[in-house]
Length: 188
Image (cartoon, rainbow, N blue to C red):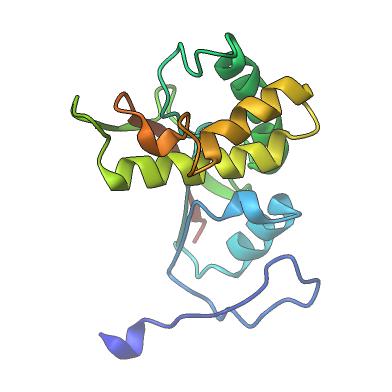
């Protein structure tokens, strides 16, 4: 089987098309939103598929959520404002349509959901807290221009590992995320 599986390391934002061969399967998971031109990458990859080949894309269906609705207590409504700004950012950076030029399946009406609740303990498990902090840090970077300074300061308190308000010190975290799946098969 080793001779049938090949990894190609490429920058799909580069205008020089990498030699992708004619793969039977291309799988992109949580990566398309990092591209400057995801539409071009989708067309490029779909165009090199072997006849009957499958191109599958799995992407976030919005940013992961981890804090309860009331958090942080000192900045009511932050969660809603942050998510609205994050969803706008997400819409600008995640492809919204499957590749064209073949049979394709659009995202389901109800994307897959994954939930990792935190048990009610004196502190959330380190992995849930670390994931929540990493997600908040990425979201903060994407929404910094869209939020008022007071909201950014509240986010910074949640991100500050030395702060008593740090997300790492909360016992009410639960990671909730959704994924959308697109699949396109190149015609024979």
